[in-house]
Length: 215
Ligand code: ADP
Image (cartoon, rainbow, N blue to C red; front, side):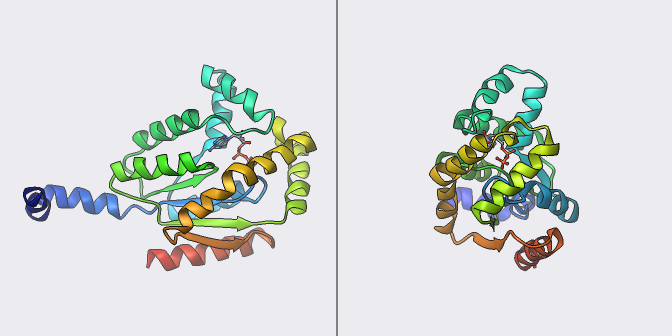
């Protein structure tokens, strides 16, 4: 143990690589379906130059390419259910491995279960980094349903087309995903952000919280 400590202290190469990883800035944009994660992610990754990892987008691209993973995922997504943990964790693990030289990651729609949260922590630890903050968007349920029905008119997403599927997704959120915030609350990483108001107001509140943690 002492020997390892000595190497870390005195080997300049190890010190440099540790420093690079630890200074990565990783955030989770958290919230129920329709809370504005996609919209705000686009603006945040541009401003802070983060790599956007949206499991919803990754899954939809697998569906479009008609891969076996996509076909399996579609059967769950069309019912408003979560895709099995091992599928999404595997997808995120590959995405982390494929993006080694980034300033940090913005996770959108992941983690969505307690098992995914623990898996993400382990994957980041292997990369000598961690989650810096969980920014949680809060929106009332009726506003969520209204937004998703409206989005369904233009999004082309099959899971936005039916109110029953929309309500099933919100149900899954309460049953399996809301507890992700409790998990990160144990590490004092959760910041609640009002998700109603103009896109610019919400963006500015998110940026204030990020800037506090960057300085
Ligand atoms: P929304 O936040 O509007 O539900 P997403 O694009 O994040 O949209 O997700 C769409 C669907 O993809 C989810 O309803 C779920 O079936 C699946 N999905 C996305 N991310 C995950 C995840 N981390 N774990 C399990 N299923 C997921």
